[in-house]
Amino acid sequence: MLDRGLDFLSTYLVTARDPASEGQGYFRADWDHPLTFRAIEGQHDVEGVFGAGLKLAALGVAPVPEGPEIVYVEALFDDYAARFEEELLHKLGYDAPQGLTALIEHELQVRGHEQVGHAIDLGCGTGLMGERLRRRASYLEGVDLSGEMVALAERKGIYDRLEKAELTAWLGAHQGGVDLLAATDVLNYCGELAPILKVAMHVLVPGGLFALTLELHRGEAPMLLRPSLRYAHNGEAARQACREAGFEVLAVEETVLRHDRGEPIEGLLLLLGKPAAPIALPVSTPAVADEDELARARLDG
Ligand SMILES: C[S@@+](CC[C@H](N)C(=O)[O-])C[C@H]1O[C@@H](n2cnc3c(N)ncnc32)[C@H](O)[C@@H]1O
Image (tube, rainbow, N blue to C red; front, top):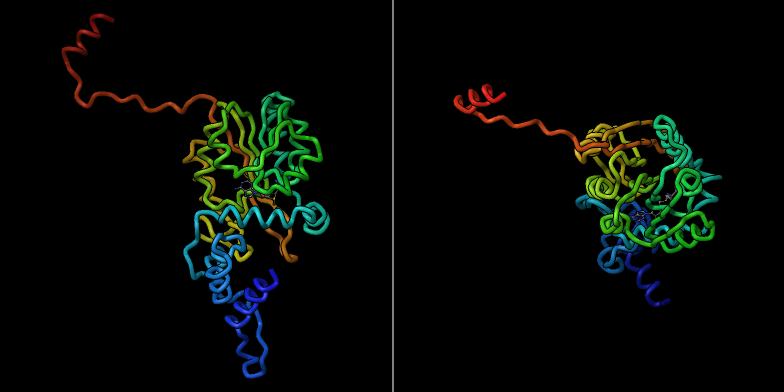
């Protein structure tokens, strides 16, 4: 293990040699230099656990993937789990569950409901959103990639069912009949929206709700990968993707999701609705009307 560690260190230190210290025998790992990540990717990150490929994409020297390697996100949150709540709530000013719950509760009130029957907390983490959803759902499922996060959520005893799984694949195999889906501070780790919107549409009942947050960016690209290795979406492009998937956009709010290195992370809170009835398609009329048939129909009528 030690050998592997030393080998690993020597690779990236030598590769990212600091030119300013040339000749003095000092080396520096330059965490913003593509060579550092090329070395890590090629020799130590074949499976993608360290996110080296993603970092190369964020540095602009590799194509941006549709989404990160699952193993990278899993390892990230397994490692973070024990510190997650303390940091998010007390240091980073994390507020997304509260904002998203307010949108859901308002919509339920408009519809004259206290609760929904079946809700799923996607990327449930330690259960910060689940604590709020519990009051609004008679049956609550949670799903998350990270076993360590799921273990902490389990201890809270707020979910009727918890699964350790990748959410898009898991939802694709779900039996459906779901009234409410929530994805709070999750889809910025997933990338492209279309695959998750498609499976969400599939599991929701007509009239069902999908509440989600996104990191917001103000540039023109529909989606970009940030140096934080989280994805951010352009607001209009995100709404368009939701409409193209067949959802109605019921509410949109801009917010600060949390802080990162002292900087506010701007975000979007979105509440989507699956139409209660299938959207009516225009009735096709024959291009050339048969005059005899029309005359017969007039007589019959
Ligand atoms: C920032 S945490 C948010 C947790 C929780 N929703 C909350 O509001 O506190 C993001 C969570 O999403 C999970 N996650 C990210 N991508 C996922 C995926 N594709 N499938 C399942 N879980 C995922 C991570 O493991 C992590 O627990």
